[in-house]
Structure formats: structure tokens, C-alpha cells
Image (cartoon, rainbow, N blue to C red; front, side, top):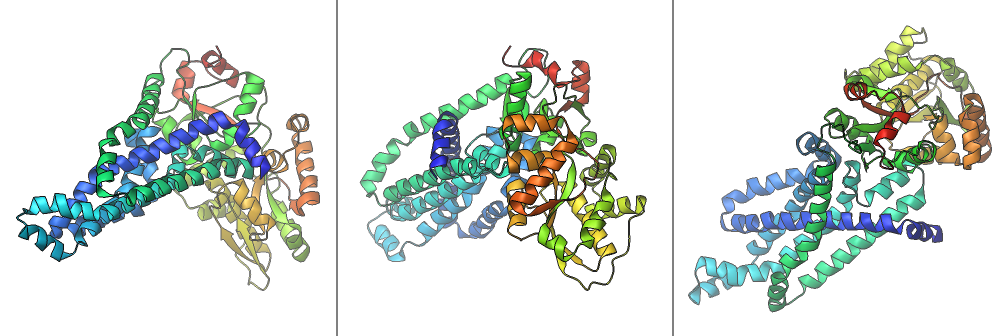
Length: 531
């Protein structure tokens, strides 16, 4: 744990900036939701025939997966603060609306009758009696919405809106618990602090609440000013369309690319290339560059979306990106018990070229063919497909990370194992990043999964920089080093590589790159912020 706090101290400037972003997004989204949900809750408490449809609709909003909602909003609102703020606003509506309705609806009818007996109109009774009495329940709704949004706001990092999610998702991707905790701890503290603040407000007297509400506009100034500044900066530095001015490029990098030594730090070290960038999720950035929300992205050289979105891979002329040859990684105890599995999977040695893997990815990502069909078609094309044999052996659990290429590979493994051995297979798909799937392999939750030599070296083994750079230039040495270290440290076995190299790459829209004669990464130096 001390190393976590040391890391937090080292990264204190960036951590503080992201904490402010996180708190501002949370605070503003809840305030905006309250401005809509509280009046609407009062309305449906008076006109109950509307309560069912309105509460039902707010409940539907709450069930939409947050990442899916962000993906829907990008074509409409772009990337950055706007879609993140809007999605958090939608998630905050339901608890505030429901608590407002419940609080007012739960007022004892005798109190309403007493108010009318004193000569109050329906409106006067609502304003002077019912709403003040319901206020603790309404504030409880605000409290719930705030705590929920602190958690959901971590996903803002997926679309370039910043926040503590940059540390959390970067740590997950890089197999770095220290980085992950550096984001998770402040997020947890923020949630506890805000919950405590609302708890105090919830128990204030009516007169104290009136005084607090008079200061509410002042409390909005700081987060509004901060977010407005962020929005203005993004709008002035990047309009969504390419221009020929210096520093006009806006790059989108994944949390993993930002933190890895062969990612953005490598670009700074070997190319002295500093680009204006936002942190964004892999699933969203391809769409963002295609729609001209971004100019350049980090990606993978065999990704099928290269063809889908008409992107150009820039040549790595200074070799910052190491080889990423794919191979199955399997537990040694599984091989000892079922040695035929190693022989079966090693039939794939050198069988998948870069272009072939790109084409298979394209079929899944763009043509929407199932990974199972693509895997079967590939095995048939190379003469390795066999119908499944009768099962009489153990079940082999095969894991996969969250992207399509992994799903194609694990289906290939499954078909080979079932076609050539008596073992059955079970697939565990979409396990997230390297941290999750590798941990699952070590603890026996899965038996094998496809991994990449560069990831095995830099994310899992993490040798010193000098060792890494020596291995980068020789793919065979890199593979043998990773294979040997995994055997010694983890009792895991790397089988033979498949042949394709899915290395990191920088890519742009082909039309834009051609118009500017940008062919290699060094050409981007003209647009570097260091100039």
C-alpha cells in the first residue's frame, strides 16, 4: 500500500486535475438532473395519471448500459465533456424523480386537510407544507444520484472526458494495481465525502435549508467555469475538421497506450513527439476518427476496422513498437494432463499472416459475421477443420479479452481441441484487459487464452528499459525470453506463434494522411506541440 501513496504523490498534479474533472462532472450532472426531476416529481405527485409512464421511462433510462449510451451519443454530440455530462444527467434523473414523487406522495393526508382548514390553497399547501416535509426524502434522492454518478463518471475516460477513470482503466489494461488504486481510492473518498455532505444537508432544519438554497447559484460557479473552460479549449483547438495549421491534430489514445513504455511514452522518448490528445476507449476511437472527431489514433496493425473506416497505418520508422506475435498461453498442469492439446494447437504455427488476420477481423467487425463462422471457414481453408469427436475427457476453459480478434482465435482453438481430442471446451469471452484474463489464467479460472509477445513482455513481465529495447529488435529472442520467464515465474507455457504480428500502430484517415503526405510517424513531428 505505501507504493500506492508514493505513486499518487508522484502523479499528484495529474491526479488532482482528474479529481476536479470527476467532481465537476458529477456535481453538474446531479444539479442539472435536479432542475428537471424535482419539478417533474412534483408534477406527477399532483397529477398521478402521469406517474406510471414518466417513472417507467426514467427507469428505462437507468437500465441502458453506460458504455452503450456513450457510444450512442458520440455521433450526435462528439467526444469529450458534452456526451459524458449528458449521460450522467440521464442516470441521475430516476433516483431524484422517484424520491421527489415518493416524498410528496407519502405526506399524511391529515396534514393536507389541516392546511386546507387553515385556508391554504392547493398550491400554498404544496409549497409551504408538503415540499418542506418531503425535503429529507428529496435530498436522499440527490444523495443516491450523486453516489451513483461518482461511479458511473469513471467511464467518462472512455470518451476523452477525463476523470479518475483514466487511472483506473489504465491500471486494468496495464496489469498495474498501483495505478488502478490511484484512481479508485480518490473516487471512493469522493463518494464518501459527497454522501456525508448530503447526509448533513438531509438533517438540516427548514430554515437552514432555505439559507443553503440561497447560496446554491454561487456553488455552481466553480464547476460551471471549469467545464466551460474545458469545452471552450476543445472547441478552439479542434473543430472536428482538419486544418493546415500547426498543432491542429487531435489524437485519441487508449488508457493502455498512454501508460505503456511502448505507447505514448515511447513516442516521446524516441520521436520527441508530443501530440494534443484525449484518452478514449478502443471501442469508440475508430468511430471517432472516422467521423472526424479525432485526427489520429493508436490502434493495432491487423485490426479489421482499418479497412472498415479507410484508415492508413503510419510506418514506425524508429521502431518504437515491439513485435506482438500471437500465441496460446496455457497452464502447464493442463498440458501434463492432456499433452495432445499442445500438439493440436501447434498446428497453427505460422498459418495466420497479417493480411489474413486483418481480413478475418474485417469479416467480424464490418461484415458482422460471427467469430464461430470465421474461425470454421479459416480452418477449412487450411485443411485443419474436423467435426467434433465424442467427448470423453475433461473440459478445457478458454478465455478471451474483449475484442473481436481474440474471439476468432479462441473459437479456432476450441474447434481444433474438439476436432482432434476427446476434450470438451468452454469459452469465457469479453474478460476485459490483460489484468483480468491473465489473473484468471493464473488462478485456474481459465486454462488458456491467446496472448501477444509484446504484451507478455511489457505488461506482465515488465523488464527494465534496456532489456526491453534489446529484445524489440529480434522477434525470436523476444518470444524465447517471454516463454522462458513465463515457465519459471508462473508455470505457464507459450505455444508456437501463429505467424501474424498485431503490433501497436498510429493511424489516420487515409484521405487526410495522403493530402498531407504523412506516411510515417516521423512526419507527425511537423504537428508536434514541442515545435
